[in-house]
Image (cartoon, rainbow, N blue to C red; front, side, top):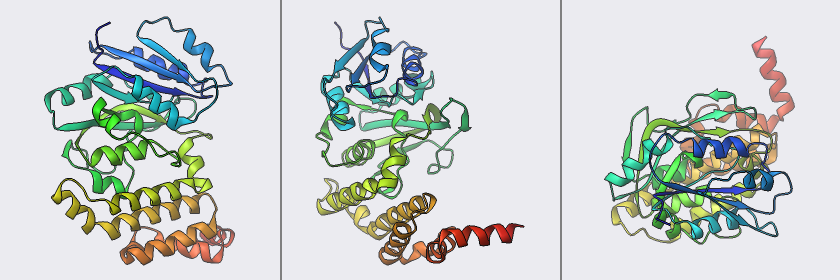
Amino acid sequence: MSRPLVTFIVPCYNYGRYLPDCLGSIFEQQSDFDFEVIAIDDAAIDNSREILESYRDPRMRIITHEKNQGALAAVTHGFEAARGKYAARIDPDDRYHPNFLATLVPVLEAHPEIGMAYGDAAMINGDGVVQEAALDSVHGGRDFVGNELVALMQHHFICAPTALARIEAWRGALPIPSHLAFNDIWFNWMIARDWDYCYRNVVVADYRVHGTNWHGRIARDGSEEKSIVWLLDKIYSTPEKSAELERAKQRARSQVYGAQYLGFARRYFGAGMEADSRRCFLQAFRVNPRTIFADRVLRHFLGTVVGLKNYNATKATLKS
């Protein structure tokens, strides 16, 4: 078989209700670029296997795990088996827009210095209804080409289903440390240490938010915070190949750690986890005192001091 230009990697575990939407969005791409689909059945106990086997398209390959090995292993096996020049990774609860390949493949074909090309995402709910038409808050409605490591370490803004990267860029970031709570942040940060990125200001995928979202779970159980702090410490303990990037990284150290602790604090606050929220607010103030002036920070910090019940009661009184 000839080598496909693109490999789509779909780790599958108990999201069978969304899987037809995801796979359909791959096979309905409006372009002539050759692709393959590698679906990893990570010992799902729902109907994911039956759905995968219902596709008779020769471009689909299924890798079967007899025992559940977790998302990190599933994604790793997908990249190891990929034959494409470029690869994309998508969770089965997300979906592509028909323009995904047509928007991003030409960027990588024309610019060998770019390791990853990505676009914007819309947010949809569990029923597939659009909640937000676009999510990008970084690029100001404009395309961008350049290094994004420092920006990414402050705010995770590349949505996994919007990204297409060279297979050597993905594999260069392997192995994924087994203790991490995620793989998308790991790939985005580690690839950015070696490659420039290109952002196209076009919505190319839908990110689905629902009650069982992985990132929501790891934010609440604390594993996101532990993983991100470990990863920041790792990156700051090893110099970049580019002296210019290393200088930029070191200059931004307080902003990077401050932004991350502020993000943890806000997510814990939204989850009603007062003690963890307060702890992270204080850590953000310590590493970067300027974070105290960010939008609603003092208000939320005081809410963790007086208690969320009293905070919400006071807020309701002021609105009435």
